[in-house]
Amino acid sequence: KRRSLDQMQALVFNEASNDLHLRTDYPVPLPKDGEALIEVIRAGICSTDLEIIKGYVPGFNHVLGHEFVGRVVKEQASRADLVGKRVVGEINCNDCKFCCSDAIFQRNHAPGRSVLGIIGKDGTMAQYLTLPVSNLHLVPDEVSDQEACFTEPLAAACRILEQGLPKPGSKVAVIGDGKLGLLVAQVLAAHGSCDVTLIGRHLDKMQLVSGVSHVVLTGKAGAATAAAAATEPADAATTNGGPAAEADSAVSKPAVADMTGGLPESLQGQYDLCVDASGSSAGVYGALYCTRPLGTILLKSTVSLKDPHMPAWSAVANDIVVNEKVLVGSRCGPFDVALKMLSDHASVRQLVNAMTCAVYPMEDAVKAISHAQQKGALKVQLEFTNSPDPVSCTLQ
Image (tube, rainbow, N blue to C red; front, top):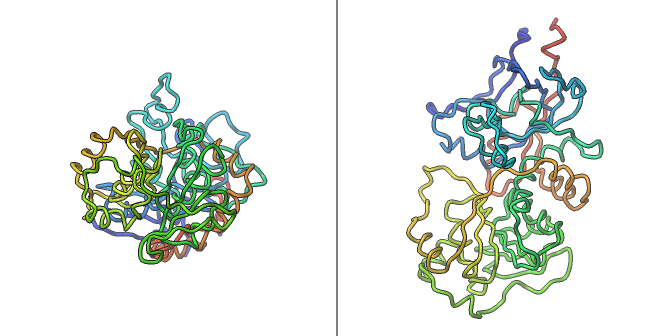
């Protein structure tokens, strides 16, 4: 059976009917003025995609995905030089042409924007997608397709640096050894301006990151023990007591043990900056627990509002107010910095390749989602076989 030139394979999720379906007759998108049509080479499955399937975006009925590397096959602007080139793309689309003096606000928060694979725009788990030419970044030749597919989450990790954190010489804890937590720890370690402790439940995952000062193994597997990072000798991150550890707490010790996954008391109040990349709605409790008074908690996790473990705001707010802590959100980051990280730092390339646990053909996209949903899975990618160019060729 022939497939029309204006149809393609696409993985579509309908939140209203809770239906995840691989379609073979999905319309190929038509680039608007200023947009490029891009043939997807690889697409990554992100925790946000899995949260969307749980109901994170009410009313979602689009192609999933926002991580990709692709090749420009047609453009509607003045950048004919992009045709045939490998690109990655920023996910926020300034559809209303909003303009202001704050470039980061314009990039991340332009009013009326659509967001690739999340809000109002079909995503990357399809043979073709469209993006504004202004969103595109050329991929350096030395960066492979597999590595380039990590540009978006790596940029999210680099956003922390763009926000002016951490301060030089500060003590930083990264909570979470999932996909984003590992990338954040590696970016901060590669930046080299601070002492980084990575906290998680899987020593094998945390040992993929090079250059961190300490790793702390928590939960049942580690019985809250600390281990030196495998890449270089370091003291165990089990600093005892001290004034910071005795700060006022709005949460009782038994409750802390439940909500923080058994973080050891030696970590309480020890860090100037704590990044929550746990992927859990309750992760903020652990971040608050580890942060000293006047310290900063930076949140990288987004979760479904249907999560039954959503934290009580009073417990969060009381700690922030009493101990004068700063709560910072952190989202999309600079693609140019992420691509430079991939080009310049062998440790970053080594990590993203080690994190890629499976690559599935597009025909097995639903199976790939199931794999990504498995506990402990790191990065699962979709690979697209060469497709006929819907712009310039015909099917026989």
